[in-house]
Image 1: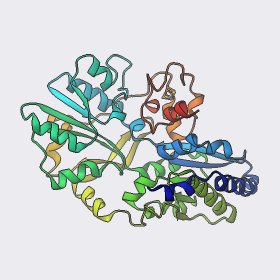
Image 2: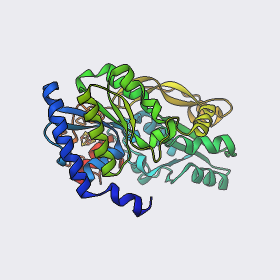
Image 3: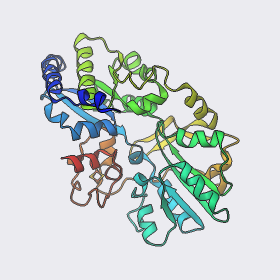
Length: 371
Ligand code: SF4
């Protein structure tokens, strides 16, 4: 984005004006509710913007901003990491994005992550993209490779498009750990009313793919206002104000604040390709549970790329809560990173213990690096 567009979206003066208006409006709503207005920012990148730009500190006591489950690395099952560690010592090279490199598996034992596996002789490489993985595998046809496909709807096209259009080498497999975002929001509202969410800031990047209309169910079925938001401070502040105003008027709706990027229908072309390559399946989210139709599985004729299918392994759910770590509560909005006794003690960005401290989208990591 050019500076001409960015500068007004980072204007301190304008930001303070919006924050003052949020203060006025939210006091009225908080009085009606008998408690602060609780707004969940679904996405890790929004949490980064809120923390980095000090937006939480601009909020009055009548507003609480709660980080949500929008960090794909944090919710990736520990069992997948265990499996990949094993493979890295057994004739496969594991190719992973950097943000999942230090993700812990289910046990506290060494090697507990691909990072530790690499330091102990496992074959692991960090790659920037699936296209890099394809190149690496094509250059070494006598070796076997497995790509760790972690992410939400924003990341899925990175593998779906090359699979659909390209030629994937026979020696490359994929561990598909993709998860979809609207199902987890529904699950959270149905199963955890104690989180008391009054409004939701919906993810901007994800919505660029799936479309802002994907969040229409929130005002229609749950009477919760939702704003699809951009990631600059003025975007986030405007989204908070829009939510508070909808609450004050008692008219919950869907607003697309990020219309410079997000269309109501999303990217229909990419959605079609994703749908041809994957089918929706009930899937396990670390720290949360099994959520109906919240994950992706490769369809025919792409199934042969699936490492679980290739090895004849049934997907398992293995207890992956680490002793002392409250990341399960953090991703559900039931606790803050600072509530964890290990925060910045036994768990730091340089040496993460729990999953929420690993990725730059994890709430613990964001709080640790921006406080
Ligand atoms: Fe888990 Fe570390 Fe966060 Fe504590 S600080 S909840 S141990 S990730």
